[in-house]
Structures are given as structure tokens and as C-alpha cells.
Length: 397
Length: 214
Image (tube, rainbow over all chains, first blue to last red; front, side, top):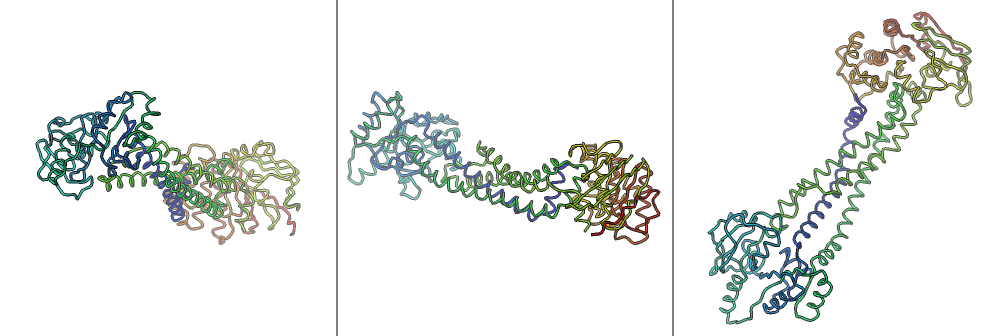
């Protein structure tokens, strides 16, 4: 019979109060933990997605939209830019590499990206089978696309107009699957990669059919600087002297997270209020329980328990509630993250998963347990000060 | 265990509630602290048990002067050397009978000996109640469990406060016989505080405390 076992027995003896305390801690910790998990994974995905990309150049418009559509493929592009201007920029002395993107079509919700093999190389992608595209209308699929569509080498599919599903299909221009990539855990897993010529082939014939003849265009360029000095001059040069728009992924994502941050702070504050409420619950529950148990505390003292032991016993009781509630909260948060990740697998880009541990969670549990212990401190001190003889005399009536 | 009380006084809210000039109990003796309500029987029992410090005077138990002992040392001394049977029995409700008894050893910093606890229960004819919760016991059974708990650490001094309160004649005699027999079997000094006239003649020694009025 340890003090821990005794504390557990007392908690079990008042199931309703214990369940309410656990639920309060679980809700508070769970809410904050889910936010931590979500924010961490979103930030990591953002960093991973923009790794090696210093600048995105595209048509004028919203810089965040340009970054989201060109790197994360979650928004519509701002427009197209002339190929000759893009080529000129790619040869700029401050540019080490420039990966072209031609967007506009999708297949079964997966975006078709006209580019070069330099794009999968940016994400460290490797071929699982087959090869990269070479001739027009050849495609290499990201791992998720291949699995989702049960695609095989040699298979065919058609693209549909627009980067979201539902547009008119280009039945006269089927793609041929020539390769499938290994999973990378990045946005590349969800893309269909082909040559820029394929995108032109589909759209130029489409437009020529409508009697139009237009200069060749691409959607964006993903640029890596040759030198860090480029960061201070190149974006200004592009934005000021050309019809193009340059957006820094790092800056735009920081701006986006700053906007998200306010909402996240509000939700974190809500979670903190829940934890505070749980702590007040521990205080009220323990105070009421100890009032009813004053004689038990006196008996413990009479049996030889020191004041410190009685203090520790009550603190253990409060701490167990906080710890158990926090662990339940963490389990709920990870479970919820996993479920949300699965439910929104297509739209969320596989960003959210419960199988992860964020450093902040350790601090969160520590903080919640400390809060529970602190809430138990006042009742514990009352137990500490129990006047054994007087309490037992009261009991005698 | 030898008890030696000298010039002991205790005041509560300025009022003298206990005044014992001199009292000695030798090891193995069975004592009754007798007197009307308010005579200070329980106060003296609490002082002997180290639950209360006297306002004045000296109390030594087993040769150990309790006055200079720190509170922690007094707790340890009480846990290991003294067994107390409270009037209200006071078993801890959420844990089993066996766990209640083992708790006494645990709190005294001794190894919990389940075999000894079960043997004590068997000796007190409640061997089948080891796993029962206190709420399921009759008053008599609960009192036996409290006695087993008090005996668990092989105390040299056994104290009992009004153990026959609310009991009928037969039960009262049974409890006193049980206490005296267990004290003798365990070689412990027994001190019982009671104003119950029915058990007055059942003890070898008696200390009469005068009533103080209220």
C-alpha cells in the first residue's frame, strides 16, 4: 500500500468529481496540443516545401497567392509570364538555378505541372519505377497520385482544364505514364510532372483551335540565388523594372503565419483557460474532499505519517488528476490530428498526422501538471496543518 | 513499555484540562484511565501517544523523553512504538481491510508484511474479511480491524480511547478482553481511556482523573 495507491483509491472513490477534473484537463491540454501539432506540421511542411527556393517569380498579383500556387500548389496562379522574359531572368548573374513551372490543368484533382527534372530534384525525389518524362505527353507521377489513382507504367490519363477538378477534359491529348516517384513526404508526392512542351501542346492547340496565336508563356520560375547578396537586390530589380512579380517564400510564409498566429493565439488562450478551469476544479474538488476526509488525514498522522508525507499525499492526488487528464488530452489531440489528416488527405496535402511529437507538448504537460499540483497546494497545506488530537476529538463528538 | 509522567499539565484556551502530578506504567501492565467526561482522559492518552504536546511537565515513553523530540521524530516514534485504537475506529474507506492494516507499516517506514496482517485478522476471527471494504463491516468487525492495525507494527504500547462506547454489555466485555489478551500476547503495555463503568474492574491498574467541571 503506497501513498500513490492510496491517492488512486481516493480518486476512484469519487468518480464523478475525478471524471470532471480529468475531462477539464484533457480538453485544455488536448486543444493546445492539437494546435501545437497542427502549427508545427504546417510550419515544417512550409519550410520543406520552400527548401532551396529563394524566390518565386510570376505574374503580378498577390505575392502570397503566387507562393501558395507555385510552391504549395494550393491556390490558383496569378497568371502567366512571357517565356522570353523568364529565360532572360534565368540567365541573370545573381541566379544560380531557375526551375520553370507551367500550370493550368489537373487530373482527378491532382495538378499537372509542366517543368523540368530539376523540380523533383529540388525535393530530393527519386524514381520508384520507370523514368522521367522526355517526349511531350509523357508524365511521371508523384507517389500519392500513383497510389490514389492506382496508376501503372504504360497507363494513360487525360487532363482537365483548371487546377481544381471539374473542368473540361482534354480527351484529344492523353498523357502516358512513364515513371512513378518514391514518396518524399512533400508536395511533389501529389503532383503529375510532365514537360512544359506537353502543357503548351494541350493549350496552344486548344487556343489555335479558337483562332488565337499567342507567344509562349510559363506560369512561374522557382529561383535559387547564386549569392545571399541577391536577396537584397534581385526582388527589387524584378518588381521595379519588369512586368513580373517576385515573391520571397520565406517572407510571405512568415507573413501568412503572422496572420494565422493571431487565430492560433486566441485558440491557445482558450486552451489555457480550460486548463485554468481544470486547476480550479482540482482545487475545489480536493478542498471539498479533504474537508470530508479531515479525520482520515488525522488518522494518517496518528499512524505515523509525517506532516510532509500528508502534504505529499494530497499533492500526489492533485498531480495524478492533472497528469492523467493531460495524457488523455494528448492522446485525443494525436488521435484527432490523425483523423483530420485522413479525412482531409486530398485537400490538406497530407500535412497533418498524429504520429509525431512536438517539443512543446512536453512543456505543455509539465505546465498542466504543475498547475494541478499548484491547485492542490492550498488543500495540501490545510492537510499539512491538521491538528490530529483536535480533529480526532471532533470526531468523537 | 514504561510510561513516566511528572508534573504534567495541559491547558486548552487558557483553561486547565489536565493535571497529573506523577504517574508511572510499567511494561506489560494494563491500565484504565478513568474519570468523568472532561476529566482529561483523552488528553492524557493523546499526550502519551505523542499526538499532543503538554503545556507543562514531562512525559517519557520507553525511556524516551517526548518533549525534546522534533515533530518528525515523534511521528516516527509513534508509528513504530505505539498502536492506537481510536474511538471512532476510523478505517480508511476507499481501501480494503488488508490495505488498511498494511498502511500502518508503510507509514511507519516498515516493510508491509501481508502474512502478519492476515495472521492478525485470523487471530481476531475476521480472517475472511481481508479483501472487504470497511463499509461492509459491522461495528464489531471494524473495531477488530482497527485493533489489528494498531498491533501491526508490534507496538510496545497500545492505547485505546473509549473502545466500548456505543456497545452493548456483551460486546463491551468482549472488546476489553480482546484488548487485554492481545496486549498480553504481544507483550505490550495497554492504556485504555474510558468512563464506562462496566469495564472498570477489568484492568489490573487504574488512574482516576478528577472531573474539572465545565
